[in-house]
Image 1: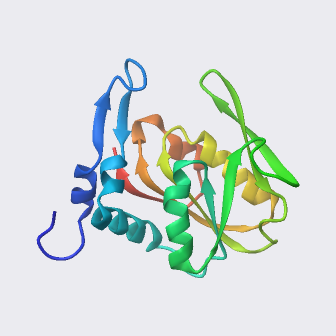
Image 2: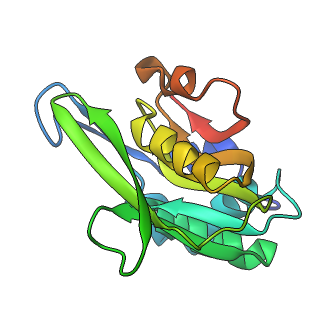
Length: 177
């Protein structure tokens, strides 16, 4: 850790474990739990993920690890927290959006009355990999006619080209591999 002041990006990166062949052979898993379990590092990560944004009405947070960062970011910004969840997990009226996986399709949803037209929102998740889930969240925000100010993620896996699927969006990635 830095001797003076908050942890640096290098300090935060050092808190992320690389686990080879998890959850299956050929995958290098980036384990954020050591960073989460260190209060000083977790606070620094949340603060850094929040810093570029102001005057935000809602933090749209993606299930499930996006909730870990979205809730404290919403609190810091004085904004509401709007969950994007797997289909069937939100009661009431929802909008749904499908996105492609390597072998199939998945669906996420948002409450249809969660955001009013013109409200300023950011989308938060722990990880930007292929960009499919975040792209689906962007589409949901667009369908609600909100102003998407930006996207904030803890980790971006640049070799998976997720940023390409989000062309034209302001993406704030704290740690890029």
